[in-house]
Length: 256
Picture 1 (cartoon, rainbow, N blue to C red):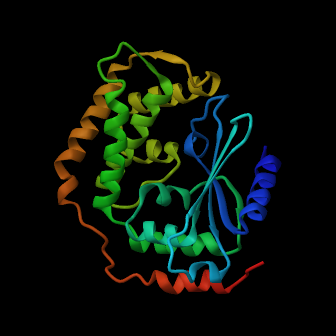
Picture 2 (picture 1 turned 90 degrees about the vertical axis):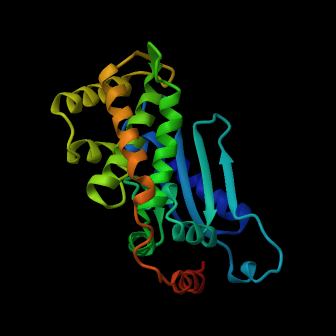
Picture 3 (picture 1 turned 135 degrees about the vertical axis):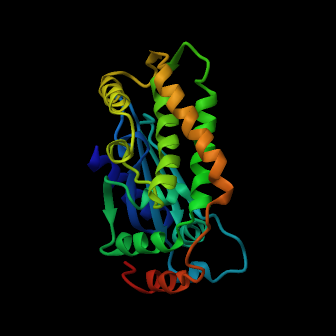
């Protein structure tokens, strides 16, 4: 599959005349709880030639590609768009720079981006991101006697990210098991979740699972706790992060 992904990236570079700086996996495979039929959610950061940015007109700053078999879903964001989102502490972007599955990277690019992400991190903005995800996912499973295991994990992951922000005061890690192992959680509940990860690894994404009252209770408690503090959390601690310097550097160096 890696070769298929790398081939798709090369074709995208050629078709759109861009240079892909970074490509990684997101979604359940990066989070650490994929199903056997989970698709591949590849996310890219790319750049155009410098002159492309010297324009008075607004240009499309995203690229989308879906393979014919729908197994491979690729989305790319232009470097300028990424840095604008980074300044806002965009939750999806904060996850991407932490992905444990990297398909392509210009040497040194993502390590610098991670440093900038730490400087731009805003607890309140990131909490709103995960709280919104958790609410939406939990509304779809609360009060139901059976649920899609996939949706339960979406609610669990987002609610645990909320807990991480409050307890650890740092960016939530993308890998779910890291949060599960390092946060203060009842050991019986932790083992229950690990058992469900094993079940999910053997079941298709359509698998319906019986209601787990303890997990619903846990998620609801995290949502309530997050709701109480979200608007009291601080914003970006560093008010002056010069992303322009990094942007110019990316455009001036290593253009193929």
